Image 1: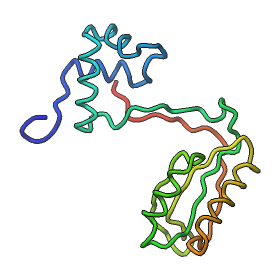
Image 2: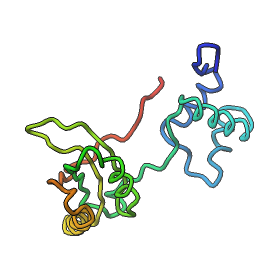
Image 3: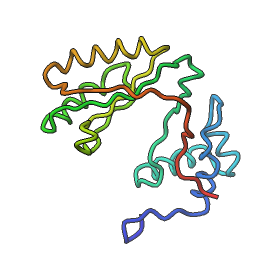
Length: 164
């Protein structure tokens, strides 16, 4: 970081970003492959990536599974109307479930959209997803003030900002 609090991206950082923005190489030692592409040591690649993560230049490093290829075809985004004063606690509890891939709070837009909690559930079919939603509804009890399931109809591009 410089004196303004912003991370300065030098030519090597930029080369690392360009080498990884389509994903890390599928390799037992992916950072070694990036290091070869950039022309620096693997340890420096890892140190620079950690620094960029710490400074927010890189938001996260993680796997982005293609659920359809994994056999999950009943993917449903469920939307829930839960008490605002409990949404954080409820979100943490439901986000920890092994069948929930992500869970987050969104603003309501009444009267058309009363939902404030979004929970993505994957399953091999819609019946499995609906069974999981019933489990969530049972867990919420009176905190479930209404919910719906919005099923995926196609795969959208899963990428972040790209450098050119």
